[in-house]
Every structure is written in C-alpha cells, then in structure tokens.
Length: 90
View 1 (cartoon, rainbow, N blue to C red):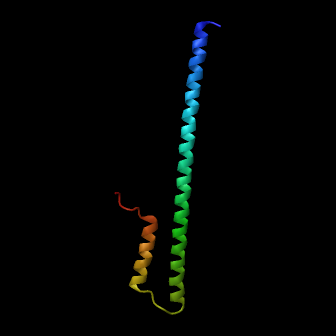
View 2 (cartoon, rainbow, N blue to C red):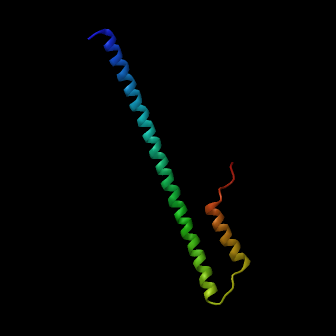
View 3 (cartoon, helix red, strand yellow):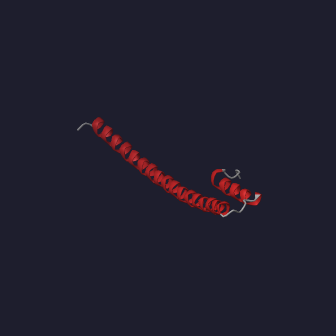
C-alpha cells in the first residue's frame, strides 16, 4: 500500500467515525424531541378530557332544565384557552 492510499483510508475512517458520532448525537436529540412531543400530547389529551367533562356537565345541566350562567361560559372559555392559547413568552 502506498502512503497516499493509507492517508486516504485514515482520513476516510476518521470522517466516517466523526459522521457516526454526529449521527448518534442527532438520534439522541431526535429521541428527546419525540419524548417531549409525547409528554405534551399526553398533557393536551388530559386537558381535552377535562374540557369534555365540563362540556358534559353543562349539557347535563341544560338537559335537566337548568340554565347555563355567564360564569359557566367563562369557566369553559378559560378551559379552552388553557389548552389552545400559548402562554405569553417570558
């Protein structure tokens, strides 16, 4: 083997190892993002379930002949905003 071929092989191997290390970092970051998305999805699902319970409570109240008050609607609005409106930036 000539020196040029050995140098090329060494450089190629070093670049390959560097690429593999970068891929490992990217994959770890990707997993962190997936975990964060899953956690956020679980939180949103819980909030939506709470909202559905509140809507059902209002439906039951109406079905029983009761009336929905402005406070009930404000509470429902606050619940929806808590799910879908982003909090202000710090």
